[in-house]
Length: 243
DNA sequence: AGTCATGTTGACGA
DNA sequence: CTCGTCAACATGAC
Image (cartoon, rainbow, N blue to C red; front, side, top):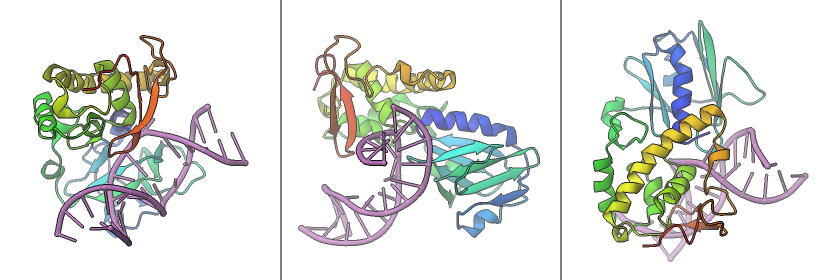
């Protein structure tokens, strides 16, 4: 489920309930302040990276699907519902996710320019942030949500393949043109991911993630747990340069 | 059937 | 106190 584009789809699906009053709230989440939002109107649904924001007039519920989270709209399944919102016109169930009430307005919490899926995404700011961490590996920086909110492990691997950069390269050693390429591809591939997920062709289109053979040179793909983030990286040792 | 993974937080120890 | 490490969470796909 949970990379930025999947949240983008979730928000699109929920937009049918924007402006609608929540008739009933249930689920096994514990915060009574969330139950107290019953009978209030959802003003809008937003996302920031992998966060889903359910915005009321004053309060905002944040949902993070983490690794195993899921949701169903107008449908039930045999699993514990963490949070259910029921409207006159339908309902949504969230499972195995993190649910929190934000302590402040989203605008005071989130830097929209860090979200690769957001209209306010700023490539220039991303470049500044990368330059501020010259000693860190690019595989870790791509997963840093303050820099690339919404980018997850799949996007990380696909972006580095497209940019031709080995995941363990230190940001400070990567030429400027390559850094710009990585930033450009992060946004570009996130939207390709979105389209392919909607078409049901996402996995089919992976160039390197979980692949055994390089699409370009036919040599074996290297699989290695990399960086502080200790996530698996897939890369081609011939087509991705180590800086 | 068992293994693994699109993620993050918080506890613990050095 | 800060840093690094790692368990915990909990489910579907192969």
